[in-house]
Image (cartoon, rainbow, N blue to C red; front, side, top):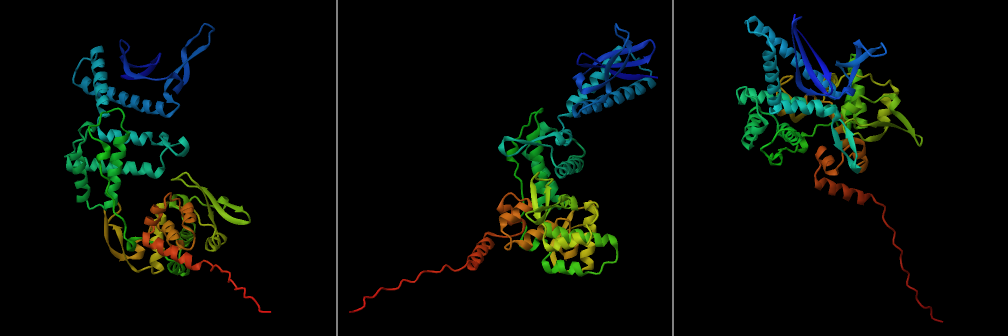
Length: 443
């Protein structure tokens, strides 16, 4: 039975292929590595003191780079055995020249791999946990967020579907990407009836991946890719008003899981966090600051430390028993059910998915159908806008720019001006001193 093992000589990795006792071949794989990146194992040889030597074990990687290299060696291992089985069954002579040709063929294929766009997307996914991202003060944070990585994975699926449908399965080469390719991709996205913002996200992903490619020449300037977006009209901003939250609080629910979802929904609408941060809240995150209770967390997406005051409505939920954790997918499903039972039925403009993995359709639906986990943060921002200073709201929701925050809740510059006028009207009137004329008294 043919066997393959890899060994390290110096920093070069060799493949040792054994067909039988008299047929053994060894050649360089073309890969090299640092011995420090691998664990060791006991050798069959002894040193001059009679102790067994230690040798590098290429099956036991230590860090991320060596794990990636092991994955390549595993693929090479499988490729050699597969080719051997095919050629042996055909009666082809297995010799050193055969072994060289198999290794050369595999090496050439792998060199070409990096020229394909899907390879570069996968590379971006693999590198994401260790990517250095610049932040303020010349510092860096390490690793993309889980949400961003998920977005890149979805983008890869989109590109694979585009290749299958628009290019008859032909893989896109990085060197062949042109403005015409971008136009084809954009037209295909529109043909799928995706929303403008979703199309904009995919074009932004395309631009980002191209900007990150270092080892293959790109014949297009990524800055020429125009990312489209569509601002939501105020009537498309989905949030739950205080009146609707009251209806939800008073709704008659007949199951524990819906009661738990209601707690998360109401709590979420009074703490203003993304679902990824909302579901990480617990009594352990509550701190007492100058005699007042607040949640203190580090937001997953922004990496920002935030202090969230616990409002009376949130305190009521906490005292009734903190809700138990569940997946964001389940929470989204249960939020809809809670709102349906609470008769949140107002006809509302929005988008609804036709199927689990389908496209979204824009239309007018009963409001409960449009409720998702995003509703918590947006409800908090919308309901307290004008009551709590915007700078404080931004610090809680995690928005960096006021313009982004205002767009998020569907407010215009005119709304801001009106808010300022309302503040001015509420300012206490400044008392002016009355000057009393000093009249001379006749003697």
